[in-house]
Image 1 (cartoon, one colour):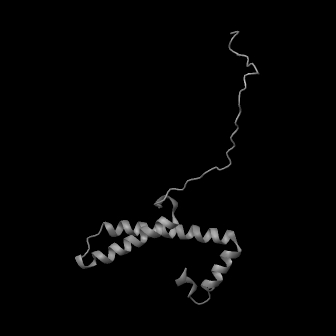
Image 2 (spheres, rainbow, N blue to C red):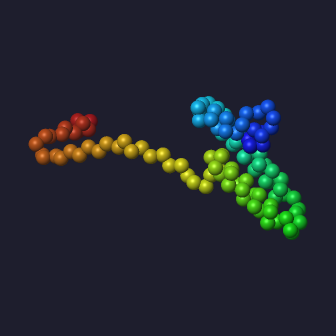
Length: 111
């Protein structure tokens, strides 16, 4: 988005971020686009891994791959390294004491 917003005729990066703060719909669309972009970078990673590279380029490519993996883990939920746990904390406990004064009828007794 940074390179796009630097081009003549496009809104500034700060204007885009302002729109994102003001409109959840715009923010959702931009985050969806970023997720697609991260998936595209992962595709490039697979291409890079299938190529033979020069020994002097190994470290640079390792850094690129690491960054793409990290970005994908943040932008695309299925690639995240943390599990999302949903917890329902609205649990009600009912404690009842039986003092022996009330008789409970067995419904299966006559069958």
